[in-house]
Length: 248
Image (cartoon, rainbow, N blue to C red; front, side, top):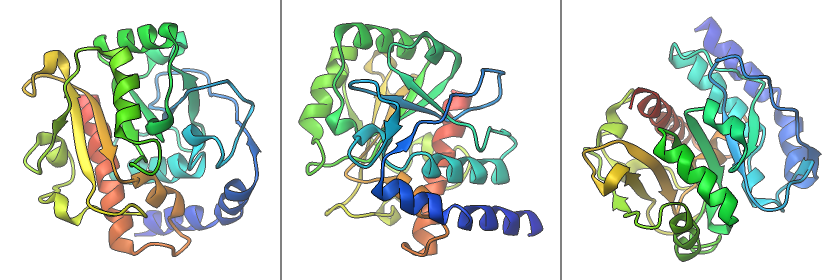
């Protein structure tokens, strides 16, 4: 209980930085040196920049969202991730091969050069696992995402997941997808996946949160904008994704 209270205090202390990041551009913090410790990796696309803002889709919720998530991951699992230090990598950055799990925000606006698509294809085929989050028809749309994803894996099929899939039981029990939180999109969240050789019995390569945004709940923790149960469900999903990705 004492440790949990410390975590909540740390989350609340980030309120000023969160508010500033929402309104103004802020500098990207240096990536930590690789040392084998689990590190949250955010994928960037488009022209490289030295700053992030709400006007740069891939940077949404950075860095507060991942810091909050890593604090919770550290609290409830034995993974012992880096908490304050997170990384931003391009799709064609050779460093990405060091990290088994990567995250991309607002993939409805994602575009990729041929070189980026080729490098990212190699990452996924060698065992990489990517979490796509925070997009809907009003924010880039499925068609735009699918077009870019097929540059990476031209023959990929997208499978709609149901609550009986193992990813929803890899750490926390998520018995129903009807209780998934919905930050601001109309309708129900849709959770899809891409599997190795298009076979759902094989390794999952990509987890896709469509028409929802779980990192919005990570970022807003401690500020009272969402109900506690919604934040809890968003963290459960994130933890399950990471544990599943690390064990498969």
